[in-house]
Image (cartoon, rainbow, N blue to C red; front, side):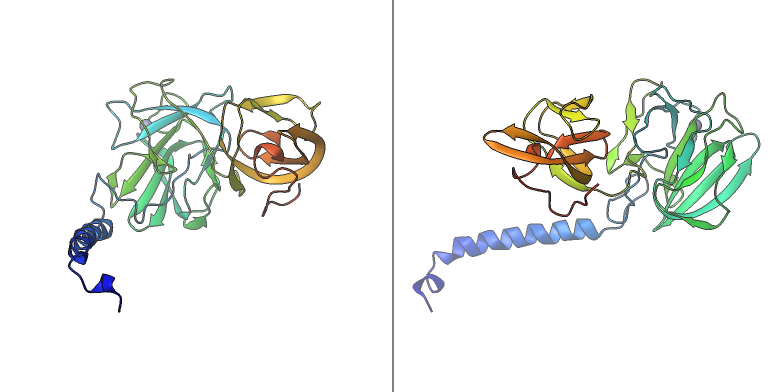
Length: 274
Ligand SMILES: [Zn+2]
């Protein structure tokens, strides 16, 4: 039809497209390849979350005598490890087990697709064997049953029976030889929420939607936050705009003015009122 479609100048473009298509075919083949043991792909991998409650900060380590690719977790936020709820890191079918000289009371959750998670040394079980559990549901309490020197959660992720390097929210954890080198704050069981980016620096998170409310923490710079609800409070002025709506942040435990999130003078779309 047009002169563009008839002439030789198309050839380099066509060659480029062919190369690109070839690359896409290779990429598609890689994505479709079954995950290998020890190197599990992300295709059917559940989005595992920390095996303890929302907002809690724990530290973890791996010792040389450890079975498979386990990590041991203890609390590092001032709370007591023993008795803390142990949560399902993803949904699945939970079964109860007991091993006197090793795992003690433990739960195995079968997530399907070859994936299982293990939770050892429980003080008590919270679910019946064979029951389906939701992500974030309590399955037991942290203890020191079996071969254990103190309360902790021994946690594993297995693919086709082989222990994998543990990933939480898609990110691989480190394998330090002792506690208090690495920490993980849980977002398991925090509930829903809508994700937004904030702007500005030093944005204060307050206990309530008022400028007189105590400051809980502040955001260093632009931050991805999860908003669980919003409500009206004090009017905040910034860059010539005003806004009296405030957002409750899931992970920071307080409110920030909506003026730091979206368009000034506006409620956030899709976020319920507190
Ligand atoms: Zn362990």
